[in-house]
Length: 510
Image (cartoon, rainbow, N blue to C red; front, side, top):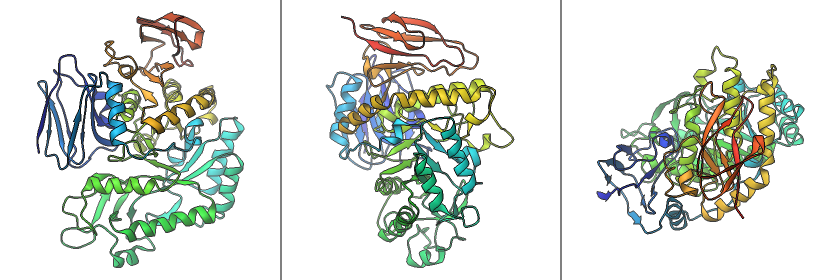
């Protein structure tokens, strides 16, 4: 099916592809295309489009979205298309869509957003040991940084699909997790839907028929970033039943609190795959999200649909660069897009970047880049450290300690925002157009609102020591770092030394 909509004068649209946040919004003079037949981005996609003029379009299925010369075209739609208008603003349209479309909501566990998260990925890559994990956690405690969730990333297990701790590297996993709990952490373990041929249960699982098969009938072995492996078929109850048994054992036997559900990308499935029940590649990704939602502490990076689901979402791995597409410059626009796509509980990528290729041969990006990365994440709904910058010395550790504690100091405010998101679907992190409609701020991509009270304008340009910020009219704005009040209604330039995150508190006029 094909649907066509005219883009009005001074109308702007946000399309539900999180990785494309830096390209949003688009209007009458812009071109944009998203092939949603199979999600081939490394992040979340939800086929929801919302407009600054108070209307939305939602596709209940796969499609291709194309905008050109003032026309918005939905083609090859596999399901119903819902379109409503008359809500006046971007906020009105989004909340109306959330009320109608997001059926199940609950708040995520507070510790995921009231304290920083810590992940072993860039700290150790796959070279994890019990000793390294405990040392990592104790170093956080020694610096008096808030204890949040600690994630043991890829490398703790014996093989992909063999979800047992490595015996030599982890002689007593239960004792390790007890120690992490004593330090105040919740513990999450990395898992994926891939099973390698070398995994202990591979032959038995293949005989049981729980893997995705090629059209020839053979088990599909797919190339992914860690090799070549089989894929669990989410439509087969025995597949995720087997995985759930393994994960539940890790909880009951060792005390793990939850899991980081990586992979699950639609791009690793094919339209002609043979499966237990009919399903599209996007559908397999949705089933992976459903499985993750069984666990209180969970995190996804790749997700299709599931707007409003109470799962922590994370931006895909970012490069250690200032780039607006894959680096520090992409964080604000992509986080804005996550909120407008139905993913309010979203975490920017690891501070300093989480791209494995940036690790080799490098020890630390320059202090300026780390400081600005830390500041950029500090007043987002979540922040996640990986490398233990707090152990580097030369003043670098001060940034980590300062902004980890700043984030934690917003804990009660973040709780309130999370509660609101659970009730209404509202983004926790919001673009300026959402809170201040029709004020000409739709294209601002380097500042955001945290709820409706705080305007945050991180420095994302190398070498900058000041920041230009647009302050909405109708209220005053307290520049918190200097305790200085500014009148809204124009652009100001504020001082932003290396250790300063520019942010303002909204003050209503009396």
